[in-house]
Every structure is written in structure tokens, then in C-alpha cells.
Image 1: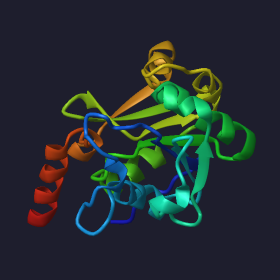
Image 2 (image 1 turned 180 degrees about the vertical axis):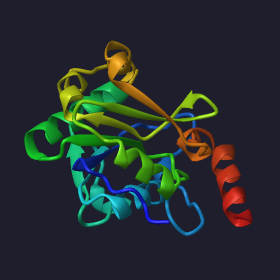
Image 3 (image 1 turned 180 degrees about the horizontal axis):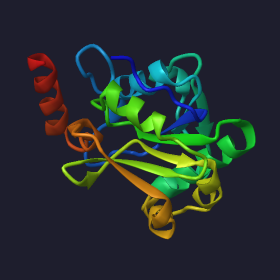
Image 4 (image 1 turned 30 degrees about the vertical axis):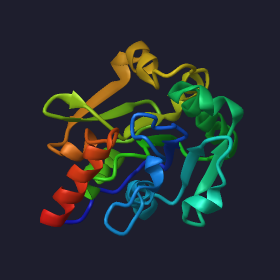
Length: 203
């Protein structure tokens, strides 16, 4: 079966500026069966979207993270202050430099989102809609924000991400049940990574 075609030009925005203190080290470079956690998380958006942006820490050297050549890097001093600041910095760059009508918000520690899931979400992308994947009625990522909602994303701060935007524009939110646990599974602790390695070896 062919994948649904995205009718709305969409850019990926991955947040990778967190310090992952609960993990105990830089989890972005942790090995996940031959690829880093960051590399594994980037693989899906890079394979399905022509435009990919990543928000890094202000002190990062992007060359040390092994990023694909076509990935656009966002670095800003405020990204050290929390997820809201990181998202705002990325949204401001996209607002100025991207011609996309939708952004797909990815997190750098979520490598198991299925390709079919992203294809389904992209087919629903719209400049005036927010598309949120769910699994077992729990909301996950990536969340697709139409361009109509980029301005409030640009104003975010703190560490709450885009929750306030989702609440403010609840009427524009479309929940999509995916049956994909990958939209929920992130890596916060070393044992989370071990669990993913075990799942990959069995699958």
C-alpha cells in the first residue's frame, strides 16, 4: 500500500537542546545499535521530509553530533532555559526562513515512531490545523502545527513546550489514534535505552 501524500508543505523541527540530566550523560550520543540516539531519531524525518531543522544547545558543535548535511541548525543562548525557549527559537527561524505551511515537531529522544504513522499525520497537515498523534488515548509526538499557529509558538518560554498553544487553540486540534507506541516512547533514563535496544534485537 502506498503512503499518503502530504498536500501541505511541511518542515521538521527537532528539539535537541535539552541536557538530559536524568540520563547522566549526553544521551543524544548514546549508542542504539550502530546509530546514536539522535541519529536514530533523525532518520525518519530526514527520510520523509525535504526540510529538516534541529535546535541544539548554544555550546554544541554540530560537527561532533554527526548530523546529515542537509539538516539546518538553530542555536540560541535561550535554548538552555527550557523546551519552550528551544521551540520558540526554532519557530522564529522557520517563520523567517522557511516557505513551509506546517512544521512537524519532533523530539531527539524518540526513535521508534513508525513511518506509516508520520505518513498518516502528513496527509492531514494543514496551515490552519494542529495534528496530534495518540496511542491508547495518550497524546504523543510528532505534533504538526499549521503556520497559523507559528506566531504563538515563537512567544513560548519556560519548560512546558507547546502545551499552552494546544490548550489555547483546542478547537483546531485534531487527534489521530495511531496505535503506534513509538509516538509515546522516549528515552529519559539509561534503562529506557536498554529497553529500546532489547526491542530492536527482537524485532
